[in-house]
Image 1 (spheres, rainbow, N blue to C red):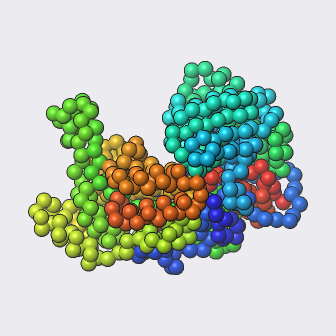
Image 2: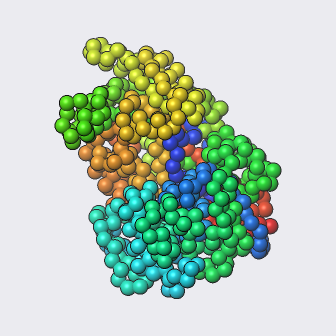
Image 3: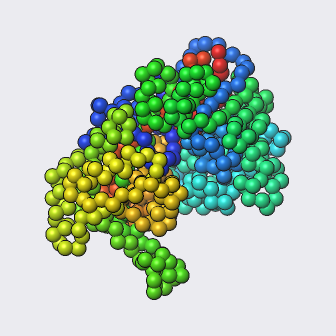
Length: 565
C-alpha cells in the first residue's frame, strides 16, 4: 500500500460505522472542507519517527470509540472502532501492514507466500512462539482459530469465506487454498482472523457460546500484553507480556476506557491529561485537534456518507411474511420491493439534488470531508473520475419526466435514525427544493432503523455509509454491491459490476487494483446505486509525551513499541 500523506504523522484507516462523518462537495473534493491531514493509503505503520531514547514503565490510557463486547476475536468486530486495539494488544496478528515499506509483513508469522495465480498461500510460523499459558502457537492453533470464524459466523467471516481448505503441512506451516484468486489475502491475516488465541484456553469453554465463555473476558494470546482486568462499562486493563516474541513492551500496561465515542468529552479528557491517547470520529473535533497541534494518525474512508437507495430489493417470502408483499406467495418465492428509487432516473435525481457542500455545512459546520466521488483526491485509489455534480435543474427535469408517466406522484421516503437530526433535515430540504414530496422518518432508535433496512428493506432512501477500507477496498465494495452478497441491502445487481469486483479481488498489484477501481467508479456514476456526499475521517491522537504508537489494518493501533516520557 502507498505511504500516506501526513497531518503531523502518518495516516490510519478505520472501519465500520453506519452513518459516516465527513462531508461532501459538488463533485470533487473541495478545498473548503477538512482537507488537511487526509490520508491516501492504508494508514498503517509506525505513527511517529523519533530519535529519543524510549523509557520503560507507565500505563497508557486510551479512550476508545466504542465499548467492545468482549476479547474473543470471533465476538466483537475487532477493528479500530470496536475492540481492535484491545484484541491486538493481547493477540497480535499473523501479518501486519507496514507503511514504510508499503507492504504486508509478518508479525507472529515468519512468512506468507502465494503461488503464481494467488489461489494458494503458504503461511510459515515462527518457531517456539508460545501463548501466555505455555501452549505452543503452531499450525494446528492457526487452523483451529480461523475455523471458529466460519463456525460462529463472526464479523470477519467474509474475510475467510474464500478459504476452500486449510492444510496443516507441518507444525509451523499452513497451506491455504482459496476458492478464487485473492491478491490481497494477507489483509485477512492482519485482521481478526490473524488474531490467534490459545486453543487450550478456548477449549476449556466446552460448549458455551463464545460471548458467554470466560475466554471472552480473560483471553490468552501471544501478543505484547496480557489481560489484567475486564470491568464492563468501566475499563479494560492489560499488563506487559515479558515473554513476547518481539521483546517485552516498554509500557507496564494499557488501560482502555470509553467516554463519548470520540467527541468533545474524549478530546477534553486528552487535553486535561486524564487519557494519553484517543480515537476521534467527529469532523469538528478532528479539525479542532488539528488546529491545536496534536499529533495523530488520520485517514479518510471512502463513501463514508451516502444516501442508500433501494434499487428494488427482492425479498424471499416465508410463511406469508412480510405480509405487505408475500401474502398468498409460496415459501421461497422472491418478490421485488417497489420503492420509488427502483427507477434509475429517480436515483439520478436524488444524486443531482443533494449537494455535498450543503451536507457538510449542515452536518459539520464545514469541517467534514465532502465529495461525491467514490474515491476522493486524497485516496490512493482516486482515478480522477469525478463524482456526480449537484444540479437542481437536472434533478427537476428527471422528476418531471417520471411524473408525466402517471405512475408516481413525486413521493419519496427518507429513513434516518435519531442520532443526528440534522442529517434527515438537510436531505429533506434539498429534495423538496427540486420537487420531491418527502416523507421523513428519523425519530426511531438505531435498532429499528437497521431492521427496516436490513430485514424489511422497507425504505426508499436511508442515511448510511459504506466506509470502504483503503487497506482492501474489495471487502466493503463487494459486500455492498455484489449481486450475490448477503449484505447488499439495496438489491443492486449488474453483471458488469460483479465482474469488476472479481477483477479487483484477483488483482496482484496496486496498479491492477486501481485499474479495476477506476472502472468501478465509472460504473457507479452510470448506475447510481446510491448517492455519495462525503468520506469519513477518523483520527487517533496522543499527548506530546506519547511516542511509538503504530498501527495495522482497519485502524487498529499497536502499542508494543509505545512509550511515555
